[in-house]
Length: 506
Image 1 (cartoon, one colour):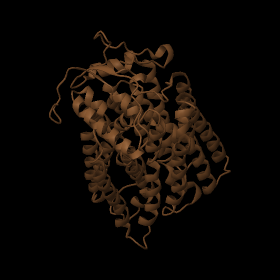
Image 2 (cartoon, helix red, strand yellow):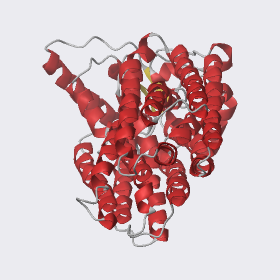
Image 3 (tube, one colour):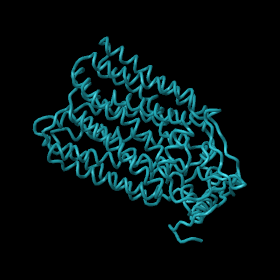
Image 4 (cartoon, helix red, strand yellow):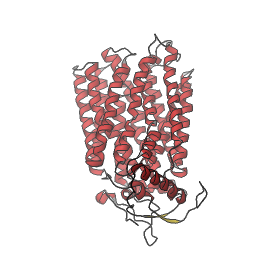
């Protein structure tokens, strides 16, 4: 046995992946979901609060000399820029130092930055800590999605990943309703209510941090990084716990995997793997993230401004409308998630992307002709985002499962950062100008841009998506450190041939 945390590398044969994938659903898996998935609630809370308090922050007496366009444009872009930078920085650390260390550190960064945002005394301070809040949240995406996919059995991976990513919208609902209360000047002064919304994010984050301390390191990461004894001990404990819970023995695992352990993977090898060995999967990742980023930015960052400027909704009431579409967003992954494991990844990813884009085109046409009011506009948005939310959540699932184990966190970080930078930095800057103009045709243009990119991403998914449903992560993409029986490296997958490579069980 090696001392806990001490890596001793060599060549090992392990059944850890097969042992994890054949586990039935249990209380242990619920602990994983609660401990890791709840951070998306914080992200939803953050983004929604800023969108809904934009009009209040720009009013005299808010305590900050800031305009509505600065809040929904520059501050939103800085938040997304921070998310992209944090994803890349923490993604590299996650693959190198482990999932658990990083999902604790990134949450701590979020907590500190959000607390600082709540006490903003000037515009530059607000902008700085919006960037740093995004920095922490971006790191969460890489660390959390890696851990979730490596701990959840393959039979349930698709639906669980979608529902967890979709929980973002529970936070969005909470943020929308919270903004209604916080912006009520009969309860809180103008310069206090918006600060309390950020303070609540800190409280929720502290609760999540307490729960997350009990979530284990990924056994898959441990056995590759020279900690195979710890990985086996952890899985032994989980198996005993589940057998005691179910009252029956577990079936034998399907097969073994031979690994030449390593302490880290360099950037050159990561880049070569993503773009030379898996070029079509790389195109798929880019397309999915860019499409969903533009569609969501076309709607959500200008949501409050559209209701106020075009439908005369008061700034203190926009939260009710946003809560309605947020509920539709959460229902999408919740109700459709199971189909990604049963009907299959390709038809569901392509279908949700294309359908949501087409529905947004219809919404833009109805809005441009003046046939919508605040309520019917919200209903249209809710229907669009019901499908778009499932599709957007599947983007994170896709890039976390179609690349080798050693590159997983960096793959998530890279595609999130590049795709989101394209849609999430330029998007708010573009859409804030369009929705702030008060011109109907400008808002219609914003919708059509998002819809077009979403449809195009769906078409790419139809041709390039991988049939990953029910498969072990190691069967979808062989680890870079996998070895054949004769000690030779496992041949790289050739997704261009059939998009469904397999790894020999050893």
